[in-house]
Each structure stands twice: as C-alpha cells, then as structure tokens.
Image (cartoon, rainbow, N blue to C red; front, top):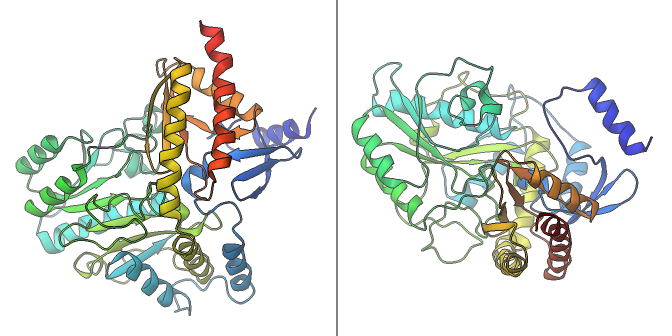
Length: 424
C-alpha cells in the first residue's frame, strides 16, 4: 500500500464523508505549485476555490502570521486589540465603505449579510415584523448552512435537510426583467444577494451591464444590493472586485462612481491568502449600525492574528498588481484554450474573466467524464476539480506566468487527447 493510500484510508476511517476529493494527498505548497506526500509536483489550478490568489505560502503573509503569533493570537471581542481597528481602517479605506464586520468563514459572512439585511429592513425600510424577504439568484452558491441551502437548487446540498427557512426566495440569474418584476410585486424585499460571476455553477459570467442594472433597480425599489465577492473578489477576475463597473478606470482599485457600489460586499477566501480563515462584510453606517452590541458576533471574528494576516494579504495584492496580472494572464489563458478547443471536440465551451475560468465538456451533467479528465490532469501534473457534473473550473494563483500557462496548456491538451481518441 502506498503512503498516499494510507492517508486516504485514515481519512475514510476517522473523518466524516462529506467531501469527494481527488485521490491525492498534499503535503507542501509554494507559489503556483503543490507537492504530494510522495514528492510529486503539480500546478494548482483550483487555488483552494480561489483562496490562494497570492500563491501558496507567500513569504510576506507567512511572516505576518509568524510575527503576530509570537505576541497575541486571540482575545475574543470582550476586549479591544491593537490590530482590529487599524485593519478595519485599512480595509474600509481600500474599498470605500464606512464599516467592516469581520467573521471567519465565507458562509458566516453570508449569514452576517442576511442578518444585516433583515435588521435594516425592519429598522430603516420599516418592513412589517417578520415579513422581510431576501432574494437570491438561481444556481447560486453561498455556502452550506441551513439558511443558505434554503435557496440552493443543488439536490446534494438540500436533500434531507428540510424544512427550508422562510423569507427567502430565488429568481433567474442574469435576468434583469425577472428582478424588476419581483421587486415591483413584493414591497417587503430587503436585499438581493448575488454573485457577480457564479463560480460553483460553472463560471457563469453575466451580461456586461447586468450588475449596473441590478444597482439601479435596487436603488429604485429601496432594496439592498449585496455582492457576494467571496470567490470573485480580490483580483481573481481581473479587477479588485468583480462588481466594480466596466466604466471604471483601472483594475487595481475600486473607486466607486456615485451610486455604483453595492450596499454590502462580502469578502472571504483570498482575504487571508489561504493562510487563515477570515471573512468580512463591508457596508456603510446606515446598514452596519443597525446591529447593536450582543446581536451578532464570533469568538474568533476580528482576532489579532486574522487582522495581521489579512492586512499583509491585501498588501500583496496591491504591491504585486495581481488584478492586472489576472486580467492579462486570463485573456492569454482563454486564447490558448481556444486553440485547444479547435483540436478537441470534447471541449464544448470556454468562459471566464481574469483567472476565474471554466471549460464545459460535451457531455451531460450526470456523466463521470469531467471527473475522469480531472484525474488525468492530476496524473499529468495539474490539479483541477469538476463542478456541476460536466464543467471544470480553472483558477490558478494569480502569480502564474505565461510560460507556466503554456506548460499547463500542454498538460490540458495531452489529457484531453486521450479522451478524444477514446470517443471517436
């Protein structure tokens, strides 16, 4: 038995069976690469679902982690600490909001946005008691807590976990007419929570003006527009935030035009560069200050270690111009994928923005083919994972070079060749 299989068997024996990972056991990460327990090197084309935008174990982020860990790691929010305020000022200044509320996981941050939405709805919009409605887009992914899966269309997330939470509803994604019709006919909607690009659905990119129209409709109907940027944010899609409008100059900042910015932005994943669990909700005072002491919080939320790590992680994005890198490398990667597509009929669709991309395999969603292709990628030195059955997401660290992309294209083409020849 290999050492890889020993580790896998140990997980199966002693851990919950709530994931279906590729049959690989990783032991080390550096830059765009990860290494398994047997020493083999792989290109990481998942980046922990876009948590490792800055690259694995970025030295500046690790330095911040180690330095802070030597002095103070946790106080709880029963006391102030000397890292929280400075980081909140840095974070809000970077994105142009009055306040930040720090949590730990992405799902916690979405729950926070939902609570803020309801509280604002009752306190400010004056929605009748217990009548608030939070609206989502279909084929969404915001996490797997009980409230969040109440608006999921994924049977794996929902079967056996009912009943659903009331006060939540779903409309078609990228359909501005559906949004307007819903808001027109329901005066109790307090927020519309939406991914600027739907990652788990297979990197579904909306029309160019969709988010601008969402903003305008939410303003017109006094509804909070909430952008879930957990996966799309922090330079992944070629802009600092995917919800920054197309008309803005530059990609390394998010200087909102008047009336453009979401009422809330949800951040996570790359907020710590994959080094520590950190998430945040950004909002202005009218929304954020509706929640009072004792009404929401977390023992670990806003701890000094998280603040030090996250500030370093954000500074790396700025200093290394990772949004620009993602924009340029993403366009190059899709161009190369188009060349592969011409040779391989199995590759049906290519889509994405920046370095958040996906290919759709020409088979139905119940097929196991995308999984088998990802296993072939793995054997050839590249790690990716299927989503929604027949889509494969490609999201390498943003520090990847064009030369490295060329090597990865060779791996992708080599792997697809095997399946193309077998299906002709």
